[in-house]
Image: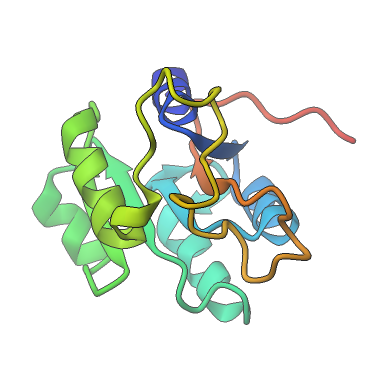
Length: 158
């Protein structure tokens, strides 16, 4: 999943990673992401468990979630049914499909500029949707995607 993180950063998204359910919730509370990408099979539970914990939090009720999985789509849909803020993508990730889903869930405004126009991780204010639910939490205006994947090494303690 390092290639997913790299791809998202190159497209102008701020990416925060976690490797288990506890780290995922900690990262969610710290970063208040605009969108979450979850692997379904996750250490210490499932991506569905993490989605339920996020949804139970007042800041997570409407955060879109993209589930990535090597599970057959029919099986994944029985475990985590799609709704207006949940999408499913098969692994390996097709970046064209991912872009379409990101555009759908975040809106066309969140689409990244041409890679050479701005440094990785930055979007011009005119094209960026706020990453968080208040400007106090993210004065930079960067879009944030929380990539929660078991393939990522745990983040070092602060």
